[in-house]
Length: 224
Length: 77
Image 1 (spheres, rainbow over the protein chains, first blue to last red):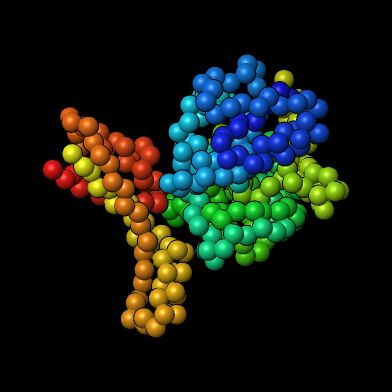
Image 2 (image 1 turned 90 degrees about the vertical axis):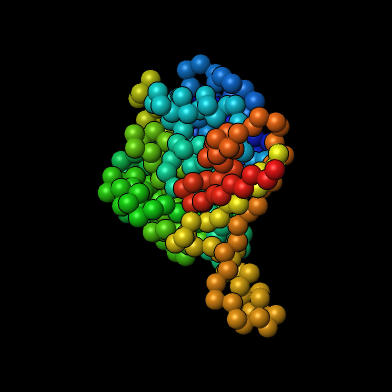
């Protein structure tokens, strides 16, 4: 699996994501600075990491979504390259229009940083194939703006098309319909607020995130 | 020329920050506040010849997230 991780000023989970991709996918991802206008050739997967890109100025993810590299990411996604956005990466993908909706300030206004229960809603995607539908897993969150918002028609469409990948199994941030992660209409872009890359090793306190990367590696190997 | 851009949350979009402000006002003894909506004011100093259409494009492409926000532009002399 050939992967790349985009690095914005203020990204802070870029190396965690790279470690997870290397541990599970077998090869080191290329780290791509946000000023680049082209991506490495032949990528299977692009990771958009968590953090506080551009200090969350204007809106979380707003500036990063307009940085030069994101045009290349959007073009790659349109060609079918897989894109995984975690936390700030999810915010960037919504701001860039690669995923619908927006992520607003948590309903309780507090930063939430703890392990949370998630339900796997769709186990048919390349990202979730190693989970069972309806399975409960535990993955950490760490965010201030994770309150997913979209108009009712969009929410109905996401649910109807099986594009809700993960839901919270407990109250976390006020997200519409407890949505924690969504897929795009072609299933090759996933954005999620919880951090699977922080749950891949026993030393992390849990390994429930590992199967996301294992499933991806498996799907993308079969692709190639 | 100067442009003032008021970015506000769309009606119906919950505003956690507005709620927190309302609670803080109540804590200070201001009980007469039924609702608070917080927005953002952005002021631009424009070069000569920068038109309203261009400012509108700036709003749509960056300054407002039209999924959740409305914006209003005021052009000043």
